[in-house]
Image 1 (cartoon, rainbow, N blue to C red):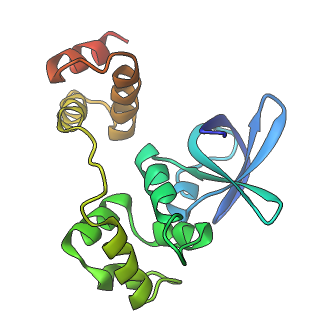
Image 2 (image 1 turned 90 degrees about the vertical axis):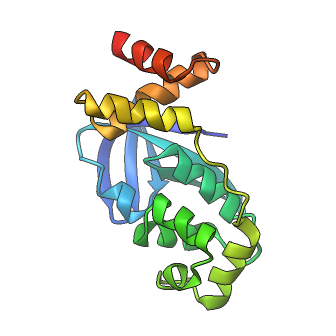
Amino acid sequence: MIWEIEGKVKRKGPTWAILDVNGVGFKVIVPLTTSERLRVGKDFLLYTAMLIRDEKLELYGFSEERERDIFLSLIEIPGIGPRTVISLFSGITVEEFEHAVERGDSSLLSSVKGIGKKKAERIIFELKGKLEKPERGDELAVRALVSLGYKKKEAEEKIRKIRKEKPELGVEELVKEALKG
């Protein structure tokens, strides 16, 4: 499984990108929201999911780890395929999706192309109460770094890396560790 991939963006379209990783070009299917963040010629980290379907290997990429994790949950729901999820995250953000599921708002989900009322209701039924929230302390640490001048994405990245290495740290320690490096 290719879990994440970092490389130079060689080319991109609305829902795909070619990343050059040490001379090897990987085609990655991405939502529109991720594609908009990519800059040709610049390095970018994508959180990925590799799927083998009908003897075809496809790599799906997301700019946020949370988006990839929800993608993996969604494609396990009968009738929801990877292209439907890409369409979903091209139309709404992860936060909007999570709020819609929590509130049971099928109208927001069904407003996305490819997701009708029945699919929206099925998604809510399958995922309501099952979406894990990021740790509250991590959110507070990110906010603290943002207030100190970090960009949100950069702050999230720092906290995520520190959390992997030192899962026991509290909010203050996370912020101090992030400021060191």
